[in-house]
Amino acid sequence: AVSGHVSQVVASTAEPPEKMVWFNVRKEPVVYINGSPLSPRDPAELHKNLNLQASVDQTNYLEQCLAGITQTAVDAAGGVLKVHKDTLFCENPLEREEDVVELKAEKIASLQDVLAELKETVHPNLEYTRLPANEERAPAEFCFDMMTDKLKSIPAAVPCVFSDQIGRGRTTNA
Image (cartoon, rainbow, N blue to C red; front, side):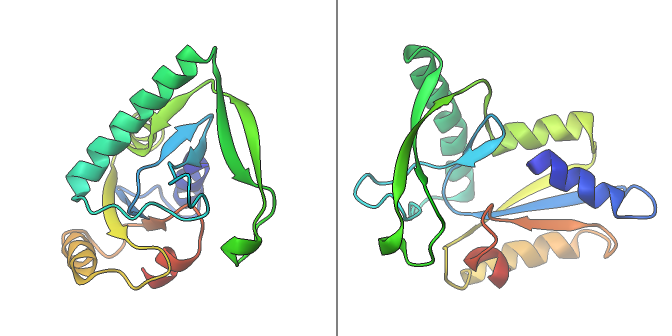
């Protein structure tokens, strides 16, 4: 998923860009299992993202730990992990139905791991920045400050990708 987006951006320019910036607009940690993003949920509110009160560095560290914990759980369960998935997308979380799926986990990685691999194999000048925005709300002022500081430090021709993996709320505001 992420590699396809990076390749698509590279292919959309006349010449491969010298640099590319990936803005992750998710506030919660994400782990990639077999290339698909999954994030932990409160068992009482499976349809809501976690609302963590942590710094960017703490969230990035938590994401790395989550990948390790997930790998340990998969190893203990014989390579299989149970995950909750929505059967259909519904705007109203109360109308969503879920299914518990057993997933054969062949590859587990954090977003930082995925982007580091892409930096080695596809785009050596790929940079990563987390803008911890709440879902369905305007980003906090410090998120705009982080984004502005980053954008001021790069040429205007540098492609920037804003991703929250869903394409609603947060990226609409970014």
